[in-house]
Amino acid sequence: MSKKKQEKVKHSGSERSVVTTNRKARHDYEILDTYEAGMVLSGTEVKALRQGRGNIVDAYAEIHNGEARVHNFHIPEYDYGTWTNHPPRRIRKLLLHRSEIDKLSPKLDEAGLTLIPLSVYFQNGYAKMELGLGRGRKNYDKRQAIAKREADREIERAVGRAAKRGGR
Image 1 (tube, rainbow, N blue to C red):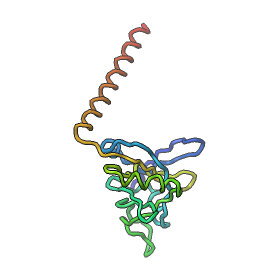
Image 2 (cartoon, rainbow, N blue to C red):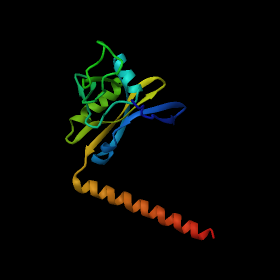
Image 3 (cartoon, helix red, strand yellow):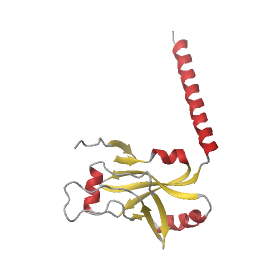
């Protein structure tokens, strides 16, 4: 079995090793705000995440009875686990401050806003999840975003070429 290389990022004085990201989320949703939440995990789940395994592509979060929970977050069974192994897709509790939950609850009741997991990482030894409050994009919005990104890249290339020619 080959180990996935974990990305290490310095983030405000503490090291952050990213386990998995949901790149599709930023394409499909317009992210309005981001939140950081801890996760309630079992021992084998943490060990599997430390191996760089986990998938949040189909995952979504909700607030139910005053608790934040994530659904469809797939953490495969730990290879060396025994009868203590966890179910791969179970509902996992997220740890948010009460004030954050109280702010998020009415926003999620609004039409079209959802809570999407953006990434899972370890920070100071704790497993964390970055959540994004997002509004779904229509197909024409996605095309506009792609066109704008390509136009920005072309502008950057043109500026780079002009700077190169001006240096001679």
